[in-house]
Length: 432
Image 1: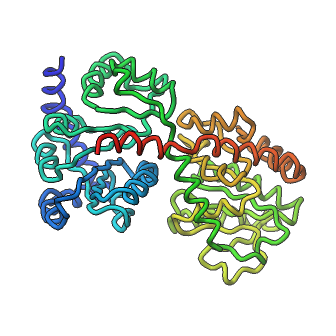
Image 2: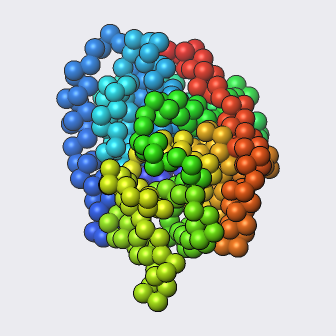
Image 3: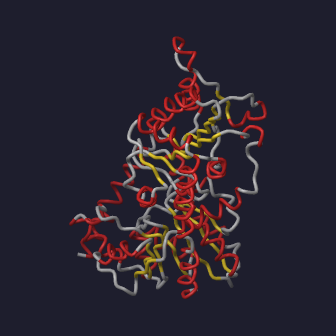
């Protein structure tokens, strides 16, 4: 079966993937950036690698996108701080690569090449890592096989295996059976994930539950956030602050009318809304939603964009028109609404929970064990429609004791799950 899968993957799946990506690149600017960025990556890697001190060991970290790289950052920072070695960081997506070019703890930053057998073997030969660490799920078969062939240890970190994972489908499972056996260590988020990987023939020596570095990362960033002052105290004084983060239009269809109703009965509520994609059109649409149609202007709310806060004049809504500051903004929240739950998949609830904030979200949380656990404990609150959202927010605004109790539950959940980074580092240090 191993040879059959190698034939199918290299002569059918990879060519189809290549053609599909090239075709989609005609219509999608992000994909085009990825195509352009890969044109000379092996040549550039040769030039950049030549500048490294070859007496130092090299650890390669690969992430699909910027989100997965956030989970790698606590590991890389501590690894670099305590060891004299080189770090190579690679990405599949342009967003990850472009937003990480100046990451200070990496010695080399690159795209991962298209996963052909030749590309993978050349890439591994040039990089020549002493250890490869794949974050979460983005594992490319030919690169894994090239590492195995070169006798280079390879880890998966923050690994998960959901009960209903598509990887468990009969034919697909056979493919992954052959893939996972090539990993030296698979470090999972939970014991349930360990059991999930055992179904793929992984051995006890390969598997270990160590936790999730996302908890460490949000905690680390929250500590740094407390040293910043993004919003002046006079704007926040005597206000109840609702921060709605990473919102899509479907989330805004709920939270905007709900907040307008809240604002009509309580003059002390302030909304900070950070759309997931703060494009000019999206920002204008949000502003128009708060302004309302001419017939209903008496119910309108004045808004101000975050970049113009120096001109703040008692506006009830602050619209965040930049990226990368959301986790810091949650520090001001008395209540948080995390977007994605009314669209497809909820975003990271830990970014709000770390500050001891009750977290509201929509019903689509199957992708997030953290949202499910917060809901179970009572620090998270699921709302299915506008009426539920209004009732929950209104209750929490009026009931300070309940608000603080739920916030403390959220904070305690994060605190209980810190420490995955140290456990992962111990496993890495056994190798390097």
